[in-house]
Length: 112
Image 1: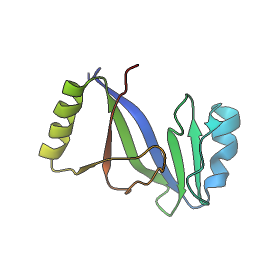
Image 2: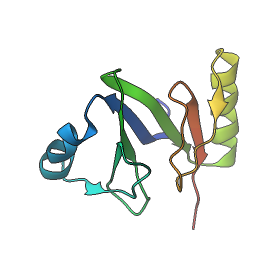
Image 3: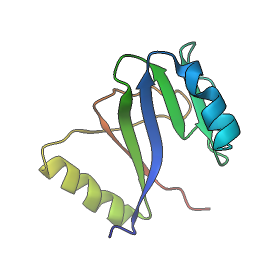
């Protein structure tokens, strides 16, 4: 349906992030990502510093999703669609992982 938009990042909030370590590492086969704090565990399946962030908290649910657009035009169109639907858009730095849990995160996909 939206072949110009890809799920790139996922945040999950659970009371004890380490409780999911064996599942993500041994069952799914993800690699540990770059640490972003004492209570957040990160995972990845590619060269990014992390794709999945498991934060300590009471939600027991997804806390954010981040998407990558395949090109600038797709990025701008999706960002406008999200904003026109009444949602905020924000930015995530992959080097820090600092994210507000209710913010929709957008990322321009870098092409090499």
